[in-house]
Image (cartoon, rainbow, N blue to C red):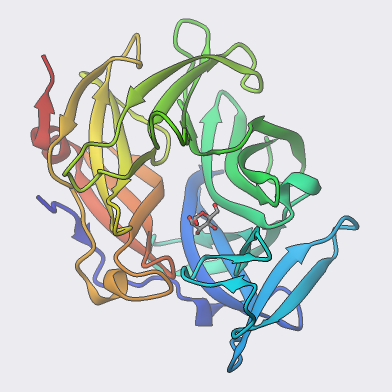
Length: 348
Ligand code: MAN
């Protein structure tokens, strides 16, 4: 059952609210923000997807070249070498490209509803981030903020890590999970002295798009991988599942909000409860979504029928999620954690 209480002010941020980062560029989508607090202030680290403004009969591919400068490839829509069936991704002469390039932009808020752009922008660095960086999760462990994000290049879709203590200086630690992998959420405390991460590799021939768990001694080098949560045939989450923001610690277990999609690419949110001491054990899971696309801003946009979250705030029983709607807008919704727990079906 959809138990989300959406903000009346939705959408909170839309592409028209922000100027492009370069003269030729236009913001096409504002989506999938990380959420964190720093010095008692709430921040969103928003994914900004940019490209050249649409032109009749043309298609543009923005990407960073070896010198880190942005270049734009211009294609004709009737080019026989172009396969253009998805708004997000195209194939040209046998190679895959994204139609937009994403970077991360910081916004602050006083009231959780209206947002102010801050100067901080984080762009892709180096060969593995040439098509952009996306869908960041921010986890605070002790006094360090860990930014785990999707790093895209012609070599694949992988997971990058940057850390900061003060949001001024960043350490760039490179890729922590090679392709194909995304949706990495770190647990915000160590368990039995180890860091834990949820991640989402894709296994093509055997297996699928499942959520995995990994351990680390230093938060950078990961091992002991275990498959935790799978997609379910004939369900709303039949094609893929992926973790949202850092799991929420409750008395009964780690509550993980996750997204699930079917083969029609309809993205909903569900929840699962992981064992406190051994999060590889799934104790319970929701049967039906706790949130599904239904409002006009969720049903139509750059890529319709999507609700996707990778950032939230917790205040006792109140969970505020910020989410990407239709891959184009940033929205907010509140849940009662007890109500989510009530939707869980226990696994024997
Ligand atoms: C999918 C979508 C896109 C994203 C690419 C690469 O196609 O999630 O938004 O850009 O993957 O991560």
